[in-house]
Length: 134
Image 1 (tube, rainbow, N blue to C red):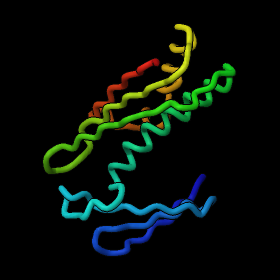
Image 2: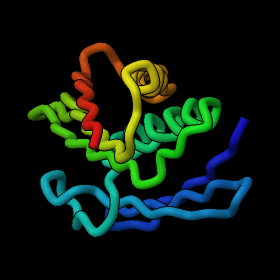
Image 3: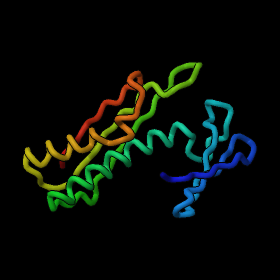
Image 4: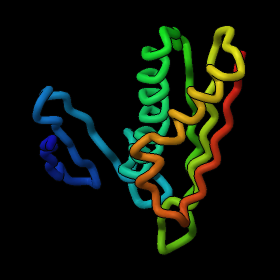
């Protein structure tokens, strides 16, 4: 169990503290939803969680295979529905540098698809994933 404490600071801004590490982050409402858009929105954090989770799970799998994924990147494109607002689509592109054989690629791709965030998304949220091997 992990505790995260949050406070509302006004003007549609919140601050969250990850209690075990004391790390903090700020969220703002997006410009298209009455906010200033000066930081991640809560739904931006869902997109961020998806991309970083997939890369983390791939990193765990890579370590088991003695592979190095440094330099791997992900881009997640978030699309919202018209009101009532919700996340409609989180398109993920993961770019992996290095030379991997087909078996290694398949294991890493399978690992990414077991990411807890990906598995936790509502079935109505489209979440296509593209892997680019360079």
